[in-house]
Image 1 (spheres, helix red, strand yellow):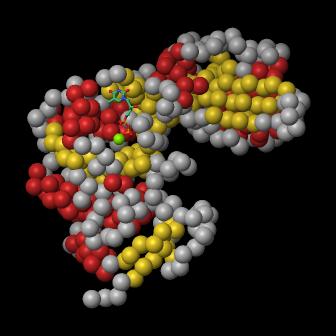
Image 2: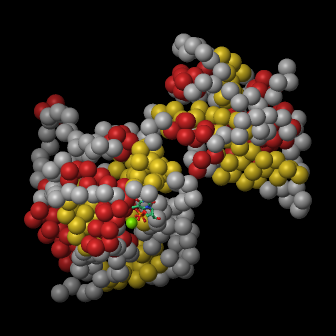
Length: 458
Ligand code: TYD
Ligand code: MG
């Protein structure tokens, strides 16, 4: 038998080292190395499985059939859309999210729907007993004979059941609870998660069964354990939202079978997750019309425009350093836009605390929201409300210029649909499309020009 070897693996990023280290040279985290034993059997099995699935010869690309993959669709169009049009047979999909956000609920609902279509579904829970899963199913009103529940964490047993039942859909909740016997480290460690995932990948591909893995998220918001997990699977979905809000967003950050940055919006109800088909109305529902510091932006979420309120509160600093906080957007954007407002518009903001918030628990990261953030800040600072039926769209550059954004037509259309009367957009975006009726589109070149218009200082 070969000599047992050990290695030290960073539990945050998967970096491997022959010696223990205090600080990971790859991700910079402290005390993340744990010792893991490398057993030759484990690595051998891995190599074997990797080659056995690729019994292929090089083929001419024109000789390969490219019929559309038949996809399995659920009765949740939002879920289908995030996956790029349905579940692809043989795909391995990772669903990440904070504890308690509703991952198990979502996947159990999807499982039940498929089972009701007479497709056998296997729901494997390593976290809950079969009885607990049953209780949840009762709460969701699930009654499907074809839904099989298994409480198991041993991967060999899991694989045996999958290959026996040959279900049309499998859920493994969660990948961090599953372990392979030949890997000696604890469940949830990098080696275990990686080896288990690669085995499940093999099972999915060789049997053509779609497998959904639930993955826990660390404090920093990445899927716990290895980043490398994200490279192995076909698609990575994040289920997110604030715990105290009922809205949940399913977002795709990687998808080999569809576009990324698609998103589906759900609402957590007493009896499970319900789809939200008109998100803009929901996000604007509680808007404080006519209050200073509030503007609305039309932001793209994947291929869909969503209107969201952006709030800012500017108040004099009481302790030395002014505070700059952002919820729901990049926190570096706030100081940057404040510097632009100070230098290019002449607002004296350096002794002001600033709090910026994307309302409704949404997260917006695209630059097209800059203009709305800047306008909210200026509006709060001057204590002057903007018009409630204005919508602002545009990226702001460091010289105070308003820059072109993508998909302007769709954004303005969505605003018009929801009854907005005026859209402030980048002037460079004005050509090449027809403005929808009922909304006035105003092109601006600079932030100061935009602020003069929305704050009525013309
Ligand atoms: P869960 O799916 O267990 O979260 P995760 O698997 O991501 O950890 O969701 C748990 C939360 O959802 C829990 O706090 C209760 C709530 N919930 C509802 O509000 N309605 C429901 O029908 C269900 C099943 C759960
Ligand atoms: Mg769960």
